[in-house]
Length: 172
Ligand SMILES: [Zn+2]
Image (cartoon, rainbow, N blue to C red):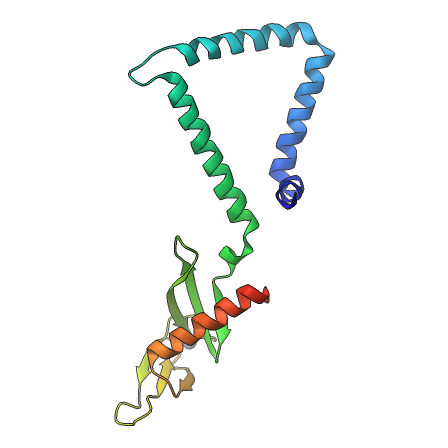
């Protein structure tokens, strides 16, 4: 039901539906012209449908309908799933950007400078310490955004947990 509400509130889909309703009204208002037109189109479609190529046309039609339905489902999911548009956020003083893989998992996570949006380079400045210290230095504006007492893997893992938390709580 929510999908129908979304489709109806969408400016493009509501126009498509309105056009369909107007076409139906026009059909009932002047049935003679439309009946001839529709019968000729339907008969040519039926002729094509039962015609033969190397692949039966009915099989092509079923495949086309399946592809059409899959495309519609994907488009509706993409439009309805605002998570797909949540691809950046600031965690621990660093602006993170990411994408989602085919299973919806966060991937291609990379840090950026909060001031100039340039991708930053994480540097482990605590190489001789027992606890690593990672500094995100902006190559564009030399801004040092944050220092963490974790290694790069731990930081990225923690950021992914924060992203998943925000998706679950819908706080993005
Ligand atoms: Zn910068």
